[in-house]
Every structure is written in structure tokens, then in C-alpha cells.
Image (cartoon, rainbow, N blue to C red; front, side, top):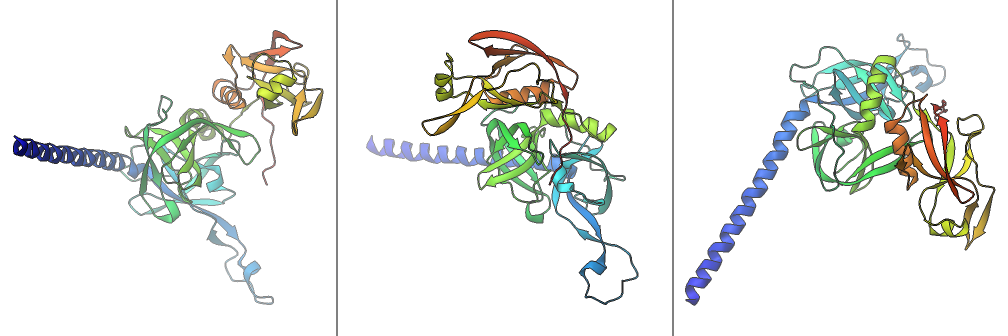
Length: 360
């Protein structure tokens, strides 16, 4: 009996190990299938800037016969959606030309149709794409934390690369070069390195959930969400620019200490600390009267506490930014529910267009 039990145990362990190994192979094959379905739509992006070679020559040397030569300005990734190439604005920069390389390893010159500093997105047009290019689709549904994703691109210039990970977090707020936040960003632990910027973050269905934006460490990368991409890219393609909605307020989160000092029932919402004097909220919202130092921390005193917009709760600054970016447009009237002088009231604001900002 003991011998039979032992044999049964060994057989069971071997079978379990075999099933696990087969399961691993199935998962690996799934990654391979997604890669093969999507990689032909991913491009290596090399922006090129014209420069005067005489600036780099020795003093007194004559100018070369060519007045300009092109030198690489950077390196990134991109992907095809709706017959255009999407990438990051910071990949394109101020380039005078953009060279693109598909998996057929042929170089093609792309035209910049539009760029947007606020969302860090750019749209390129390229003729004569390979026959294998079909274009990727943007995901309709928000990604879920724990969902498996693949990052495709050209890390460190290594073309047609893929890394695997999960969605580690959602609704992150990222700084853009203009000082405004990029809302609803996706956090992933898929390896993201220089050169991945502008590439797609895709689900195992091959749908794009985000445009890779940056890496912040070995296991932390970020992507611009597909919801924002779907709003910005068509405008960049057709108009060359995108008009972002603008409320014109500066806020601080209401934490437990701020709630206590301001006699608020709940530590939720955002406190209005300043308004743009030329912005749409200037004559509508009330700002904090002063800033007090409490337990060594500066705490705004007074002013409106914004708790909802169009009946959508605003528990955090990120939620406010996300709602404005993904649900509104310049010219829309929004209902803001605020706590003012211990009373709840609703005020209306007509959103403006975000002003231009000089990017360093």
C-alpha cells in the first residue's frame, strides 16, 4: 500500500509538472502570436534636424559645398493607426524631417501632420507603407489592474522588440512638458527603456491601451491612455493641433489635516487655492484666503472645495483632471458642486481653451 501510494504521488507530481510546462508553452505561444500580429505596424522613428556643418568645423575652414547636412536628433518608436503613425511629441521634437523604418528594414521619410505638447502626442504621415501593415486598433475598454500587456518598440535602438508585463496601476497623473498633467495614465511593469517612447502598449488581443510615455525605473513604466489618444490623434491628423479644455484653477487635495483645519466633514475633494485671472473660473469660484502652517505643513484656509463635476464625484485632483480631459471640450458648460461656507451649492462654468505655454 505504501509503495502504491508513493508511486501514485510521483505520478501525480510528474503530471502536474507536465501540465504546468504545457501551460507555460501555451502562454509563451500566445505572446508570440500577439507579437506576430502587431509588430509589422510598429516603426522605429528617427527625427532628423538640419544643422550648419560650419558651426562644428575649425575656425577659418571654408564652408562645405552642401549648405546643410542632417544629423539624428533622437530615437523612438511609433505605430500605425487609421493610416497615420502615432508617436510621442518629445520623440519628434523640433525635427525638420522624420525617418521611419518598418520591419521590412526600408527607410521612409515621414511628414509631421501635428503635434501636441500637452498630451505628448504626435501624428506622422508616410507614403508607400509595406503591404504587411494593417494598422492597430485602439482599445475601447479601460484596462484593468493585473491585465497582461506587451510593450512593443525599439528600446535602446534594438528594433522590433517586445517586453511583457501587467497593468500595475491606472488613473495616474503624469507631468507634461507644459506643466499640465497627462491624465488617466497607465502604469506597467513591462520593461520600458529609452527608444520605447511612442510605441504601443497592447493587450493580448492586440488592441492598443496606451502609448508608451516613459520609464521611471526597472519595474515602472507609463503609457498615455487610449481614451486620450482617440480624442487627440484625429484632430492632429485633420487640423494639426488639439484644443484642450481649460478650467483655470489651481487646487490642493483635501487630506485629513486640511479637512480638520477647515471644519470639513470628510477628507475628500479638492480645495481651490488659486484661479487664473483670465480663466473661466475666475469670477465663479472662491479661492483660499490664506495659508497656515499646521504641524509644520502649509494648509490652505477657506475657499471652495470642489466635490463633484456634472454629478461625477471628484475625490482627488487626478479624477478632476481625467474628467476634464476625457469628457469635456472647450465651450462646454460644466456644473461644479462645491462646499462654500459650510454649505453645498452648484455653480456653472463655461470651459475655455487651454492657453499656449512656452515649452523649454
